[in-house]
Image (cartoon, rainbow over all chains, first blue to last red; front, side, top):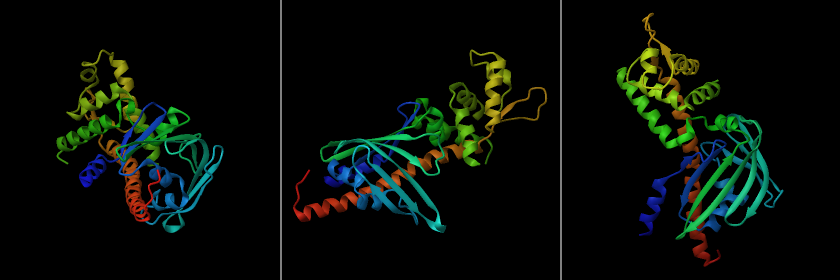
Length: 173
Length: 117
């Protein structure tokens, strides 16, 4: 029984939406209570286990000063001495349901700071995480995720998919 | 470089008329007059949109000098979808590692007999 529920949650996967022209939101369901998800988001020894640690990359620096006005700092190191750093300041902390912090990459590809709002909602032992990133401007948001977003990513995907399918079919590619 | 081109691609795609033009061109090349037909828009207005699409490399002009038919260029579109999918996949990858970590934490908690919330 538990397995079926878990499978369903996982199959839904990460959903990307755009609540406004300055935002990108990610939604994902986890099969765990939110206090546990909260810990995994805010305790350095746990964050290091999952955030951005893909193929050859490690989160070498993970400092979290979890208080309003406190700073966090992440530095990833990857193959060929590649390095990527980011950090910000906590603005709101309401354990275990809401966390607001600024974000800025060292070599940012978008202008201004962004503000990340993470909301955790628990229901029946499962936690829905929504992370909304609010950029300084529409241009900045678009720099991260430019797309015909007014009507949502899903529709864009479908539109692009069908365009691509019909073009390649039409050209006998 | 690719990211600059993506900027242009996505900016071009941000407009519903331009998306409709692309959808029309997906079914075959068309002249400006043919493109203007289904829209309540003048040919100059359509031409303006076409210019944006051409600059983004999404549309090119055919050989026929008189009709100057426009046609869809698929490559920038495929780069754009790949980018979006990469973004989603990057986070899904993170969250799958988080799934595994949470499973581990639950097991540990059970062993310790914690019921802390």
